[in-house]
Image 1 (spheres, rainbow, N blue to C red):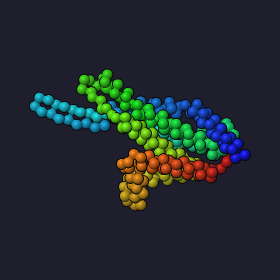
Image 2 (image 1 turned 135 degrees about the vertical axis):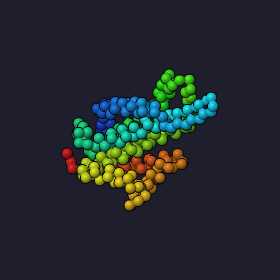
Image 3 (image 1 turned 90 degrees about the vertical axis):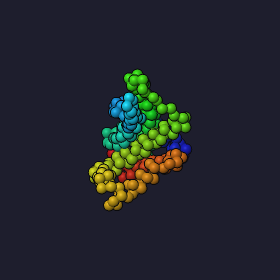
Image 4 (image 1 turned 90 degrees about the horizontal axis):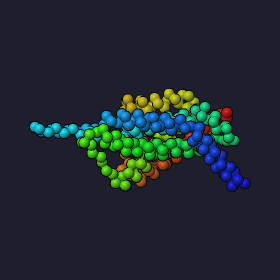
Length: 246
């Protein structure tokens, strides 16, 4: 009986996930638009340096996919919040469902979005290289990266996007419980940014940042992010049980 129940849950989650991939295709359309917009802004460069002598002047402009990654993280955060709202939740009732299957299918959808967003964000560097090669003049030089650096770059980007997806999903779940969180949580982080993370009880913000984003070991970084993501989604699933039945 336990096996049948488990199989039924997996089947429902699979159907909901496949449905959402088709029904929410506009989410991926917006991702493409946002990343192209970020590529456009990236041509302002992320840094520059120069040198000159009596007869020679050298200006060096640096370009990277940082802007594309930041825009993609914002996209993931907003997407995660949106799928917790009532219009998106009502789509789940197309199937025989419960909160667990709904949350699990959302998790798979956000995981897929993070992977797609991370890969396309990193691939945007290739698009930028092509554009710079065609229109950047003879002075354009592309940096070469080792395979390990490429793997680390792709995996780190996907994990960052997944992390902010988890944060957005938890925030959206809290807002569904009480609208006061829509003001309270942004107010806390804005206050921490204005007053300084090291003052007035905001030390925990700085501690969380250092715990995750300043980790020098890639293996520990991956482990920390996966643990935090698991906690975020587990908390969201547990809290969703407090939301009144439709």
